[in-house]
Length: 298
Image (cartoon, rainbow, N blue to C red; front, side, top):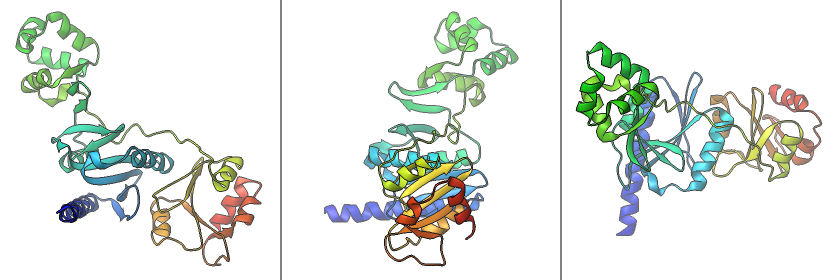
């Protein structure tokens, strides 16, 4: 019975991955699917890069996976997203959720966001909330001829509270938000741009390789559950590094999609037709521009 449930869940996830990939492709994104990674899709349209984890239930993803996705996204300048059907219960359309601080939403909400129709309702510890744009609320109230007193009666709050709403961007409960929405529509709320607010790049030197990158002036860190083993960035130069004697099939195409340099550090004999070197050769570099020049020659 358990195996049957697992197989059904896997098929449902596969269908959702395919559905999202096709949608993004139709919207002009170049899409790369990955297996055995902490994220399932990498999509790019010009400078808009998405790192997407796709799940039937968002509660099934671990903090470790979410943190790793966030780190990868920071280095490649991407937005990390979790797309799921539910998080215990079904995810509501046009409502933004979070899982360990990462934006989590259903396919419908993603579709609208790609088309610049962003959600303005967010699930927080206080429940469903929305943010009022005070300036827009005041203009809309005056445009439609509502007094402070009349609007306060419709919302069931004091005139002082309406004044507060208009003087500052306020978070309100969903019940009051729906009353406002029924009067003024969605334009009095602050939409949440899910593609903004990218993380800062941070270094972590656990291996000899990431430590060497940092010594050369890069921001760098090791990765887990990705097609590469080390990420390094300095200014506009991004280097994705794989360590081992066999290259992963996704590695080269992934680097091309991200306009990144790719480097393979072989423990044994290295090939000549790809940007590769031994660990000893890598550790002998003294300046970052020497390494970058080497990679640019391929």
